[in-house]
Length: 311
Image (cartoon, rainbow, N blue to C red):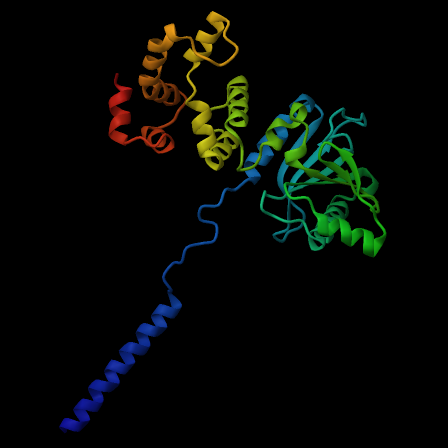
């Protein structure tokens, strides 16, 4: 074989190898970061919060999560079936009939006119699939951002005026089924504490209220609502949990309501501060938190956590 031909053959082989590599890279591209990385998924804690806020009606309400409206991928977030005809005395559940569909929009999701048409389709699909009357159905849309553009769209195009009922609840007439839009952050704290706090901008005081609910209901630290809400409000929960009960006991003992700690208790307060990390670690370890989780949550070196836990 001539030298020129050999060079050409080598070049052709190199070119073929490059083409094969390109094809292989196209067929098996390297994994890319997904847009969901770092995102808080609110639907599970919403379901938990909804059931808990309506727990007084547990004997008459049945829940189905992510109810499939057809054999395709269409799903509604929650379906609640009411077993009685009695009107429920609860701001969120007052409109409930026999079949109640609920769609939840996370705190950064908008609710547009297209979403409105979609949930209308959901109701009709459910009615057709289950052979129920639209007059026996309700649709509730729970969201954080008020749908101002939808309000304008319904008024200007269909002459429909949304009717605000107070407490974050708005009725939308014009459909054969009952429709309400619920702004979760404006809901009554008395009846809907968990749903009203389903967001990522809680204050330490609000986080403390969630901690009190967690203790009252006996929730494990891994409860889906508590886990997600604390992850979304890490700093607020950290501040709420770092307040030592010893200070409250001192104030109660001396009748101090002004928030000023008497000087004679300065040493007690100092010791409480020194022991803060130890008490927190033991407290949350008992609730099921691993050393790694405690270290991450309270910004402590893992070595320190293990050392403190042994004291």
